[in-house]
Amino acid sequence: MSRTAADTEEVIHTEGLTKVFPGGVKAVDHLDLSLRHGEIFGLLGPNGAGKTTTVGMLTSMVVPTEGSTIVGGVDVIAHPALAKQAIGVVPQTNTLDRSLTVAENLYFHGRFFGMSAREAKTEAQRLLEKFWLADRASSEVLELSGGMAQRLMVARAVMHRPAILFLDEPTAGLDPQSRIALWEILQELHGEGQTILLTTHYMEEADQLCDRVAIMHLGEIAALDAPNERRTNLGANALWQVGLLEMWLQAHGI
Image (tube, rainbow, N blue to C red; front, side):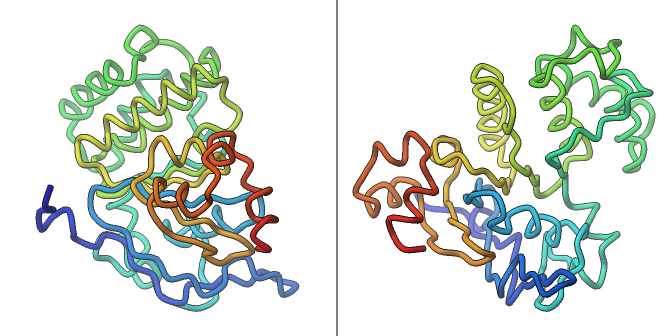
């Protein structure tokens, strides 16, 4: 199937993106990335590979030491506030407002991004149903299971209809059933055209969700291609499926 102009539109572009923390620790080393509209792009790697720092720089939460990054047509370094209008972010930690109900977490997020009261209420209800949380609308956040809370985090991140959704290890710590439920939601969002960048250390997750995967190691891209091509290049489909990323890196001297 041929791609449309929108499908080939570049929505994230970095050149020489680098972050050196105090003490000389280089978390990301001259990273060049290009993401297309509508794709799910995975940053795959073990803890400490530089995935979270990369997401931080792309979302204006971390200031790069050098390099450039354009997200949704906006220079993130020069115009961080404007860039935030184009992105939705689900961090590793739970940042839901515990003083608000489940529905209010969505409603006030929409209001913050300029939605009218009626629009925010309508969209919040739609997302509660879409994310299987309608029966929890009036519940306190602390009453949610880990999987429910994560679904609410994703729902809140897309509430203002961002051009790009960032997910930092979205299924870490979830039980298998909750992980599969979240995969289904992300695949549905992808089917609707949502551009997604996710980080993960699960090879199976990258295989299930991503159009393209970049394997990160020590702040650099060690490999970049589609999951099926990665399996072919590995020559070991079982290794990919069980998610032994560290073993693959060691086997390839990375």
